[in-house]
Image 1 (spheres, one colour):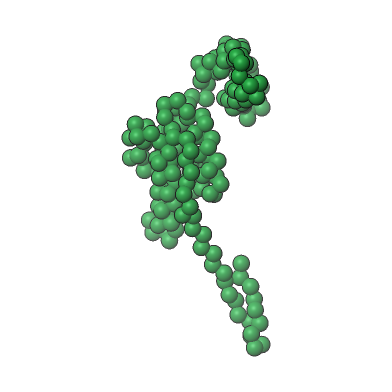
Image 2 (cartoon, helix red, strand yellow; image 1 turned 90 degrees about the vertical axis):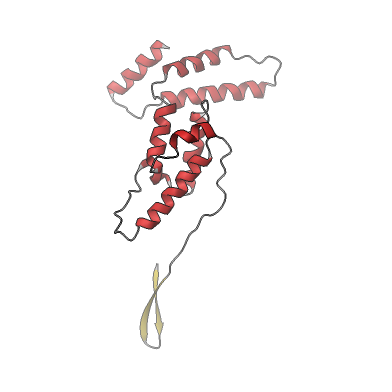
Length: 178
């Protein structure tokens, strides 16, 4: 941070200031539409996290008071992350979320709109797909990759971080209904 350098028998403190700007293009790759929230959200979280801005999605990066010296920086960073989210949506989807004031509000509204953690219908479809997927003259690697993707999504949707008895019973009950 600051280093002390002797100069003619006296000591001076010099502080290094590092300004980091990330003006590189934000690769979207996948555009959010009505069908691909699971993939899109994972990609966006990973890309935003790689730029050290996940706190704007989670609300951990709290909006300071207007009188605080970091207020302008927070506003700029919030707009930056909001633009990454909005730019990665189809125009129809974009219209639903563009007027929300913070990145966190957009992220939560998108999750509420497109994903329900107990999405049993989707789990049923995935389980059905896993049992009916066939090779059908395709290379084995293609069929294998398709199955792996199905099982990864099932794992993602059923993964519980709650190791409590209630959490395990809830997951068992959900799987039994499928």
